[in-house]
Structure formats: C-alpha cells, structure tokens
Image (cartoon, rainbow, N blue to C red; front, side, top):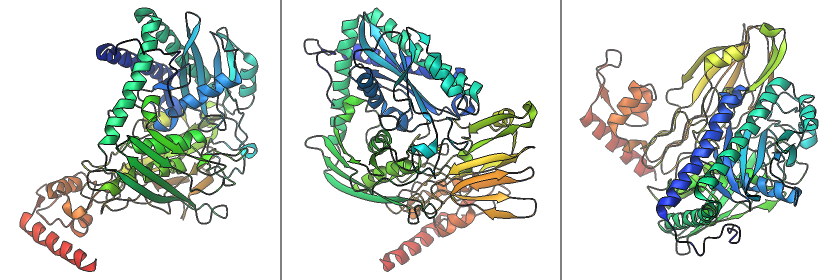
Length: 607
C-alpha cells in the first residue's frame, strides 16, 4: 500500500517528531474512548463483559491509521471494509452517514462481526472513517450460534448479510434495516442495544476527530497522516533489518471434523526475510480449495492472522498500521481455504480455528532462525469455555437468551525470554479480550458454574513454559440449555519449539446423573436439568529444553500449582527436598545438577 500523496500531502512539510507523537497518542486516545463507549453501552455479555470487539480509524483513501488495543483478527482488515464502502457508494458518501458491514466476501472477517463505518468530514472533505466492529450474540443463523461449523455454504448459515449497507443518513436511522434485523434475531432487544452501542462508538470517533482537526488545523492533521504512515514504515524496515536473512517454512493442521474433514485441514506458511531490502515475503498459496463447511478463511482473516504472526515475532513497539504493512508482501490464492473465499462457501468460523493455527505456525516459523527468535504455539480451541449457550430463561417468563461465553482461557505460548500468559484466551485475540465473570454470567443467564480452574501440568514444558489451560464445568438451572462450540486442538496439540514440549490437548465430556460421555470436537448438545458439560482448554507450547529451566522457577511453578511434582522430576529433572504440605519444599541443587546431567547424556545418546 502507498499513501495518497495528494490527500495527505507532507512533501513540503518538515517532520516534527514531537507533534507526530502528540497527535498519534491523541488518536489512540480517541480510539480508547470509542472502546469505552462500546464496552459500557452494549447489552450482550459477549461485548460488555468479554470485550469481543475492536475500534479503529482509517484514512479516506482506505489505509489503517490506528487501532490502539484492537484485537489482531479484527483490526488488520479494517481498511478492506472502508474500501468496500467507498466502492459501493462511490460519489454518494455524505456527512451524517453510517454504514453496516458484515460481508466476509468484501472485506469483513465473518458474518457475526458487525462493523459500523462512519465517514468523518472536515470542512466538507472526507478525511477519515471511524470503525467500530463487534461480535454479535446472535445474527439469525439457522442454529443459535455465530459459529456454524457444519454449514456447507452461506445459505445454510442463515445470517443476514450487509455489504456496507447505509443504516443512517444525515444522522437519522434508516429503520427499514433495523426492522429487518429485529425480525430475524432471537434476542431483538439485546441486539438493538448492541446495534446502537456500535453506532454510538463510531459517532464518538467522528466527534473527537473533528475536534482534533479544529484544534490543530486540517492541513496539519493531513500532514501528520503522511508522516505517521511513513514513520511506521521506517520503524518496520528497521525491525526487519535486524532479522537474519532466512527462508522459513512451517506446517500445521486443523483438527479432523467427522466425515467432512476426516484428515483435518493441512496448513503451510512460507516466509522469505530480506533484511537488505527490509521486506518479508509471506506466502500462503499452498492450501487446498474451499471446504464445504464453515472453516474457510475470509481474506480479512487470512491476512490478519498471518500478519499478526509476523508482528508477534518482531519489535513489539512497531506501530500496527498500513505504513508498517508496506514492508510485508502477502500472497493469497482465490478460492482456497486460506485465501480469498469463493462465494458462497461459508466463512462462519473464519475468525478463530484456522486463523489461530496460522498465527501459531507463522510465529513458530521464526523460531527456526535460532534461539532468541519466534514463539511457541499458543493454545487453541473454542471449547466449553467459549461455547454459545441459549435457551428459555425460566426466571423471565421463558424469554429466550443467547450469548457466547468467554469464561475460560487457553494457555499462552512461551517465548525466548518469558513464560506463556495465563489469560491469553486464543491466538487471534492474544490476551486483549476480557474474561467473563462467573457471577455476571450466572446473573444474565439461567446457568450454574461448578468450577473454573487451572489444570496443573497442562502447559508445554520448556526453558520457558507454556501457560496452563483452564477447565470449566457448567449446566442449566431449570430449562434445557443448548450448548454449541467448534473446538480445535482435540487432535493436534499446540506445538513447542526449540526443544519445548507441546501443550495439553482439549478434552470435553457431558456429565449426567448416572454417567458421563466424551464429546467430539465439534459439539451441538442440549443439556437437561441435572446435566452439565466439563472440559479443558489447551495449554500453550514450551520454548527450549525443560532441562535448562531455572530450578527455582520450577519450584515456584509447583508451589503455585502450574506444575506437578511428577513433571518437575520426570520432565524438568528437578529434585526437591522437604514437603509442599508444610511449606518446606526446596530445590536440592546438587541432586538436580547430577540428575539433569544424566538425563541430558541419555538424550544425547539417542540422537
């Protein structure tokens, strides 16, 4: 991408680092205010509690300018959606407009992510577009879930699709669209509250951007845009020049899915790192055609996940915008499961499963360059902790409820200098989402949680260990409750790198009064009173040999129940003395040194 030199002219202006930093932070502040508006105004728990949404600001020539703390899977495709708005409404975009976009074939992630686009005019000129994207609790799919894993195509999904459809003109609502949606979703009042919150968030962005231009002058802000994107490109160039020249290939796979995908979906990423020219070539061309189920990637998700894997592996201070994107050459194939989808193949689950795997294999590829580079794979799987639950609430005259849970978390990946993050969630959000409150979920929905806990020893062992996964159990209080999830990670575990071990796989059961039954990875189940589901999310992969981990850190892991005594000895080679029950457990340094030396000798003899 290149910046529009005519619209955001900066050739004749001197770069002012202080003003650039001030305005860049002010714009991030605007996005955070948009974020707080949406968080506080939304009605569904998936938005107001889990924060499954993102805000961003794009330029009028459709470049991502800033995203503050937006989720990686959401924000890296924002400019594709503003581009669709400009193309579909060429010559008819006016001040006071707001557009609704959830079409995965023209720039959006998947149908459940409603994006509100507000063009921002300053002195009659379209200068920015404020973007607020939020995952909806219900979108009128054929089943009460926004993840239709088994949907053969978009028709089987059932959602209403809005390809940059105008929902406001001259700041007034176009109620035809509202009536269409309210007549289609299962929880219309909740949906409408979220709808208004999304528009309100984008309008806050519009108002604050106008004030910013009024304070500093339109021309100064236009010059800032050009300087900021160029500065971001220079920062990305500098980061790439510090990388070793490399050609990297990494593979992975999505879990099998019954007869539809008996062998899963093979995945591959190729990277060419050219530090001399400060370029990263990112090749996603080697993928099978679109599949007849909901796991196909949209262009926005394929781009976002692979690019996120790159950004996870370089200088974290590089701005994430279209300026830094200029140094990445991304190759996608039309009609591929990872690429640009061919209509009407379903992209219902595009924002998670395969997207998570793409982030993982991309960041893990960087670890091939040597110690100190890349990351292990983060925990994957939208299991019980991320299920969509629905039914009739006996506490409210049997009114329907629908919501996606974000109550548990997969384990974060280990890196070359740190352990994995416990509240990581899944790779596509990278710890930026919130986790539900058990109490709030029980207040909002007629359900009971039996426990929510970490699983000791579930993180991949390593010199730096992956974070453990979490286990959850819940069920209905009175009426039947539908529970739906499209879990990955039950067959193929998150991988460790550079000698690090894999994280634990996902595993789920339905528990009845007289028995329990193991569940498949893709679940559609109806729970009756007295029944509940229990299951664990996967742990993150480890980085480096467990025998190189500081024994004192292993001791701390055991005391904190991240690790078990058995794994401490058998995997980490750490010998303790004393007792954990009376708090006298300590490391026997001499015995640990000798035991590790022996284990390393045995391992070397097997190579």
